[in-house]
Length: 120
Image (cartoon, rainbow, N blue to C red; front, side, top):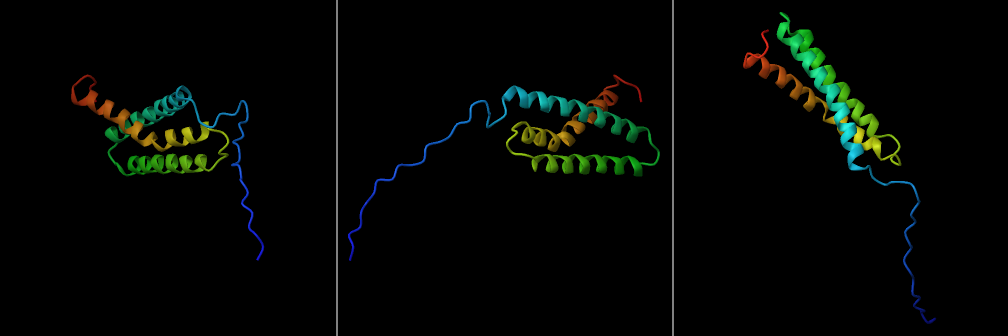
């Protein structure tokens, strides 16, 4: 039986590529999130105004469902993109939370109606 030799194996050293960030910076993420949320809040304001003034609510609810479906699909498609670009997953998170921001925009308009700041 041959003798077994024990070799000391050194672990692989990590390779750092200069100039390539592995994660997005916080200010970049907040800037992307704020941009998407401002657009989504405007869409929410418009959808709620349309719903509030419409006699037939069918198309307004269909448009709201379409907005939620399109923003979710866009978030899923953006999250499948190149993972070496760290800003894209942040954009996917912002797109996934866009219906929440649209709800906040609609809530602001509803509150304005409820408190009498704006007359319908």
